[in-house]
Structures are given as C-alpha cells and as structure tokens.
Length: 393
Image 1 (cartoon, rainbow, N blue to C red):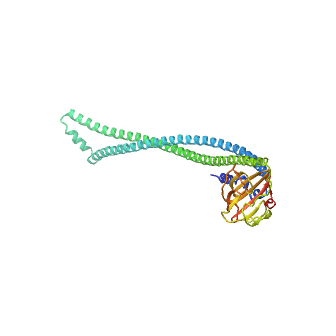
Image 2 (cartoon, rainbow, N blue to C red; image 1 turned 120 degrees about the horizontal axis):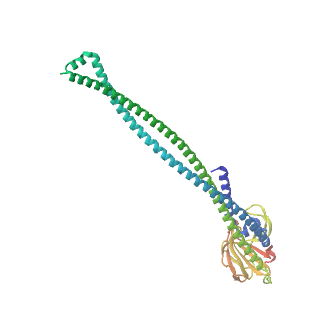
Image 3 (cartoon, helix red, strand yellow; image 1 turned 90 degrees about the vertical axis):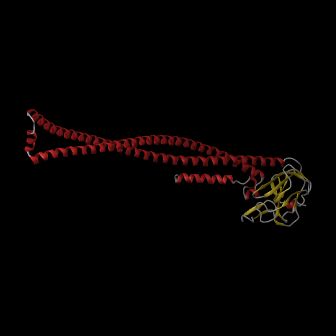
C-alpha cells in the first residue's frame, strides 16, 4: 500500500469518526446552547442539511469512481492470474521435458559405457593375438598349418585363421562405429537437454515477472478496495447525519409552531425550586470552557435529587438528553411562552403530557455541562431567552 493511499484512508477514517460523533442539534456547541434562538437553530440546521446533501452527492461520485476502479483493477488481476497460471503450466511442461531428456541421457551414458567395455574387451583379444604372433613369429602359424592331415585340411585351417582375423577386425570396427554413433546421439541429447534447460530458464523468468506483476496489481486492488470501503463508510455516515438533521429540523419546526397557539400566562411563574441564584442571566465567563458566553437562564443552587416543579401549567414539548443541557424538559405555556429545566438527574414527565402549575416534573442533578448539582432555568418567548427574574413571582 502506498503512503498516499494510507493518508487518504486515514483522512476518510477521521471524517467518519467525526461525523459519527456529532452532538444533537440543540446542544451541538456552547454557543448554540447559550446564545442561539430556535429560529437561528432552525436556519443553521437547514444550512447544515443542505451542505450535508451536497457532500453526499460528492462522496457518491467518489464512491462510484472507486467502485469502477476496483472493478477495473479486479479484471486486471484476473487477467494477470490467468497469465501466471498459463506460464506455470508451461514451466511444468518444460521441467517434465528436461527430466525426460535427462533420463535418456543417463540411459545413453550407460549404453556407451557397456559399448566401451565391449570394445575394450575385443581390442584386448585382438591385441593378445597380435602379441602372440609377434612373440612366436610365423613359425607358430606354420606349425599349425603343417599339422594339417592333407592339403584340404591345410587350406581349411588357413581360411579359418583368416576368417578369425577378419571377424576380429570387423567386430572391433562395428563396436567402434556403434560407439561413435552413441557418442553422437549422446551429444545430440546433451544439446537438446541444454536447449530445454535454457527454455525452462526463460519460462522461469517470465513466471517471476508475472508473479511480480500479479502482486503489484493485488496491492493496487487492496488499496482501491480500502479507499472504496472508507468512502462508503463516509457516505453512510453522511446519510445518517442528513437523516438526523432532518429529524432535528422537524423537531425545531414543531416547537416553533407550538409557540403559535394558546394564550400567555396571566400571572408570573412560580419558582421551580427553592434556592439561591449562583449564576444570573447575561454575559459571563463559562465555568467549564473559561470563555465569555451569554447565559440564557439562571442557575438555582439546590441539592441533588431536589424536586423540580412546573413554573406554570402547560404541555411538555421536549423531555430528552443532550450533551450541554444533560437531562432537560421544555414546557410550553401558551402565547409563545416556554420554560426550560436543565441538568436534571431524572425526568418524571413525557412529551405531549399536560402538567399543572407546581406539578413535579423532575429531580435536580448535575448532568451535561455542569460543575455541580443545580437547576438551570430559562424563560423564552417565541424561542428568545428572557431574564427569568422578570417573570418569577
């Protein structure tokens, strides 16, 4: 795998991790929690959704491109493997031919050794006869001939001795010719064997080149598949993100629409819990992030598990969990008025439920971005945060 491919895969992996860990829309950042109105949140969600849809289109194009490249390289890999298989078959045949020729060469060498031994034996006999004649002289031959009983016997013995001499000479000559022929055949077999060895070496070289080519294509195929896998994962994460944004858009739209019905409360809200205010409404240094942020409500100090009561009668339009608010509840009271109750340890109501003034809706906790148990309380009109102190009795 190339360094460039590994870097691309790493980038896609990081994108996938970031997208999969996106925080729900209402509390996606400290700014969105403490400064944005619902209208601003809805506009932001719509923009993010449009951007995500464009990214999905782009990543789908990239995915199709990588898929086509994977298919193309896969075809190349199959062709290279078929070529390698054919060359291996040729190599196997070449090895077989070399082995057969080697066996023939061994047999011819054995035959040549036997012929050589036979020739040596014939030459030795002939030499012995010549040596005997030389040592004994012609008298020995005459003695043999004089022992003939008559003239015909003399002629017969003479012819027989000439025949023996001729046969010895002919045998030696035949053996020599046979030896020369065998030597020639052995040479031709040796030449053929060397040619076959050269052919085998050339095929082996082609096999090595084909194996290297197949390995390179296989590495490329793996790289392309990894890129395709990462791109597909990125696409799926973007699609899931777009679905989440769609749900979030519908939810914020529903909340905004809920502000259009009912009449505003005639009096002021009751305190949801009894306690001192340890952080007021307005600009402040955030206790966790250490930066200047707008605080959209008030923090009321209370012990963990203290009962949280509805500031007035209304409908539960949100009862959920988010990273910033932790467990929180939104009550709509009519005429655009809504109250928020955040950092709860538990929720005692459900969405759509109608509650009465002073009814227990949850318990104080320290969930979300919180430094200790307290209740974060907000008053909003048409989604815009107001100073709760101006609406509490």
